[in-house]
Length: 110
Image (cartoon, rainbow, N blue to C red):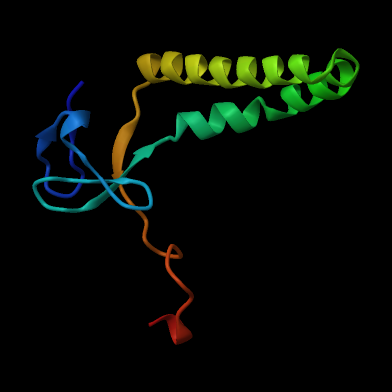
């Protein structure tokens, strides 16, 4: 899979992107802060979280700690599998990272 940097237009493979401290990626050509859109792993894992809570509350308490751990591991693995499938159907795109609001609050928007 080849992706284009939205800032400089360079064609890159995902393996060429530099990982930034604190999350995100960086273009090796223009050093622009990049992110993947949409974040499938967050969408799938948090979207399936209510199902996990329901299963743990309904079966996990009676089944013991081993069943709770098995449910959490199953939830995590299914979330990863669904993310991979979604990425194959509709590949994520690189976008410029939105730095507004990521740092400490500033006085008068400066």
